[in-house]
Every structure is written in C-alpha cells, then in structure tokens.
Length: 510
Image (tube, rainbow, N blue to C red):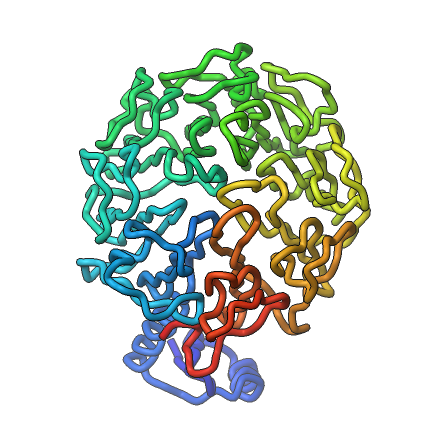
C-alpha cells in the first residue's frame, strides 16, 4: 500500500499497482504528501479518537442535564436542582455556576469510555465500553437496579457484562417523573428489568416494583430491541430476531394490541395482531402521559412496520393522536389510512407527526396551541396534511415533566432551515419571539447550521432549556433561562434565539 496525508492530517491509502496518472491526479486534487505506514496508522488512530465528539444529549429531564462528549460524561443544571440528580454531587455541596456554559466533567470510577447513556427525571445511567453500568440519582421505585430504594448521588456500579441499555424518551409526568423502568441486555443474551412495575411492565409476572435486575427468561436470548415506553402508565414491547412482537405492562384502552384492556405482567406474543412475522418493525412510539394521573385515559401505541414494498403504520388504544380517525378506543391494531410511504414519525404527548417520502408532513392529535401548524387549535382525529412540503427530517426534542402536550416536541428540517409550531413562551421555539407560532415558522439559526441532534431539560410546564449539536460539533442554546438553565451570565432573561456557546469555553465545556 502507498500512504499519503492531506493538510488536515487525513490519511489516504492506495494499492501499490495503482496507475501513476490516477495517483498523481489524487495527489494534486487533495494536496497529498507521502507518509510511511507507521505514521499512517498513528494518524488514523488520532482521527478515530477525534471523531468521537458528542454522542448523547439529554432530552427529557427535570432541572438537570447530561451530555457525553469524547466518551466522557458532562453535567449541568439550573438553580432548582435537588440533592439527588444527574450532577453526581449533592446540590447542598454548593453550586457556583449553572447552565450549558458551565457543563462540567463528571468522574466515573473507570478508565473505560462511555458506550451509551441516558438521563431522565432526576436519574442517570452510563454504560461503559467494558460492559459496566453506572447509575446515580433518584431511586424511589428501584429504577437504578441497586437492590435497594435509596437515592444515590455518586455514580455507582449497578451491573456488569451489559451490552445494551433500553430507555424511554417519553418521560412526561412531574409527579411521577422518576417512576419508570429500565431494561438492559447482558452478554448471556437475556434481557433484564428493574424499576416501577405497578402494571407489570417489568415482565416478572407481578405488579410489585423491582429494585434489582430481574432476568426475563421467557423472552429468551434472541431479543434485538426493547421499546421502553412512558412512565407510570408505561409498557414495554420486545422485538425478536424472527420479527415477533412481545408485550408487557399497562394496557388501558387496549394500547398493547392484545384485543383486551387487561394489563400484561408476563411478556406475551402479539405478533399476529400487529401484522405477523413477515413484516419488519421499524419504530414504536405513542402516548403514555402528560400532567396528571388521568393521563392514562389517552394511552395508545403506533408501530411502523414494512415489507419489501410498503410501510404500514399500525395503531391501537385511545384517540385522538393515533390517526385512525375514530371517536373511541380500539383494542385491535389497525393500519392508519394513507401511510404506505412513511419515512419517519414522531408521536409523543397527545400529538403525532408523520413524514412521508415525498417530503409532505401529516399529523393528528390534541393540537394545543396549534402545535400541528394548522393555524387553529381544533383536535384532529385522523391524519391531515399539515401544509408544509420539502421536509427532510423530523428532530425529536423530548418532553417536559408536565404539560408536555403543549410543549415544543419537534423540529422540522428543510433545505433552507428549521421550522417549529406551537407555544412560544420563554423562547422555547427559538424564533426570536415569545409569541405562539400558529403555522410552521422558521427558527432563527445562522444559515450555515446543520443540526445533528437536539436535547434539553425542564423546570416545569413548558419551561425548557434547549441545546442543539450541529455538524461542525458546535453547540447552540436557547429557551427558558429563569433559573439560569441556559446561560449563567448574571442575567435570567430567556434566550429567544439560538446562540453559539463560546466566550472562552470549548464547546460549552469548561
């Protein structure tokens, strides 16, 4: 092999028998200089490390925030954070700085890098590349899997031999923001569960909370994905490598598609009800909470499946955001009309947005504050064209701990920028205004910004502080700053337009 590098120290390799004219053209075009194999290997390793960058942003947490960058954990909060949180230290120890411009590195007692992470409510989970799972934060329902229900403020080893963690981005309810469940997969191939289990979602055959990782033997060792849905009224849906679908947990209004409304405490095969094994499952989302105990009344599930030709968006449970156009609940999964060409969808907290392959956007649901962009607040039971075309991508921003049904939960990407609709208070839309956006309105990003992901954390209601990562590895922030949640600058005014973190900070990290 022949090795070369460009001015950015990126490595190019060519076969020894490459034609000279082709090699010279490449050298000229890319400004290459010759290097030996040893230098090429060193530069390749450095390039791999440099590309690790930001790999996780919290989406649905309460007064605290966690980010993973370069395989390490960084945390911050607003001034309302409690003693047990993702910060990894009691707030009573004293906090001198807040907001995204004061993200600080959190010590994890291991030399291994972070493989995956999750932060919701007031708790955090970090899976390391060596298979160790560290947890900390609020633990009333045993969600940390430590064998007890005591809160833990420092990262603490919870399990070893872990290959995957399965978490929920639909945590919505303030009163029960820490009452959910967690699932992990271990090297033995089995799925394990812990946490809130009042409706049987942990799959151990009981309705008693679990505080120690429980091995779910009846699922076997061929589960490829667990969709861990919602908080107290949540459920779990397992997908196996043979395309079979297994469910457990809350089944009010038939949201699991079993044909009944009986809760399921042991994982049960419902594949045939959802279209059979000949279809591949692409995604599962739905609605499992917003602000009060009564949020169980609208639970539903949407499941996107496909064959070699078409997509099929199945739905069951209660209306209005499952798109079936019904006036009552259904316990039998049905195909949502006009969904044979779905590219992506987001369904969270009473509303659903469906992106089709032609770039058109469709939606249904409660439509509070005109979050569907229809210039009205009328509930929409069936899928309706949302009057915006050329949409390239849907970006999920997560939920807020309460009143999620009118918070900003989605950003649309088009060639000319990013668009939002709905409630605009506290600058949560990033448009430069606090007024409601009744139709799809362009966010006030700089023209060269191409977003990779968006996250944030809440104080309450729709008071949320947002952070976005772009393709240049820059971080942009906006939203509610009443408790210094966005920027700690001596001022608590809300940030109405996305601003670049900087001013002596490296990517917002001190």
